[in-house]
Length: 340
Image (cartoon, rainbow, N blue to C red; front, side, top):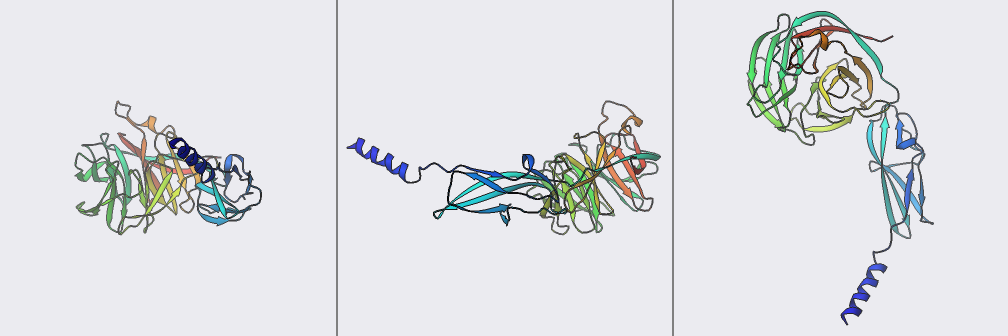
């Protein structure tokens, strides 16, 4: 009797829900399922189904089979989904798809116009001017600080040490407040600008780490070591959205110190491409330019703790950039111009 029951159960499983899923393959009309902004999809499927209807979705938004990407569409990783329906039964197939920048970035180089002293013990993480006053955030557990600096002579005017449990990261100044990130503690700090007194802290949400920070006067822009830059509300510090940073060939990760200049984000690329700063369009995440700072590190004192280029500050009045690095003894004032 038990054998008969087991046999009947097996037959029921085969006839109800045990049927093999149909074969479905999505074709995008783009090589390796990658396309450049401004191009079009040519969606189709190969399937073992015969009499079916089909709908396509891009990140769960319905699209047509010949969907046209606009040049300012957000770049990065997408999901394309096909939903096939046959005899009131629906089947889904999802594939990854990458939208790249429409063109290669412009290449830039630099000219050093002034050199200033810089604290060689500063593991520089964030750098930003407020008028002539330079604000700097430094890292490493037990050595992390927030400080104001006279850039002309390198003198530290005010300094505030972080608890040794925190590894300081990027900073920005927005509406008379300083916002400073920490690395893996899932926490940022807000300070009163003049006194450096702490006003509050805030938690991260979807972003897991704190790297670089800048602002456009309204929104904050935060990198976290991935290819994403998060847009953050400057009142309650919640992450509202993000962009993904892409060239015409690949995603750019390890975006570190950030600076907002004339509607663009300038970002160090930590240990991704040495001594390079990328210029990012914040509307869609496209890398519009790449600045080659090779050779700058050779101009500083060579010592055991010397580390990578990290620190971009734009002086609005002088219309120049100030560049330094982790444990560099110099701060460089530079002009940037395109390569011929």
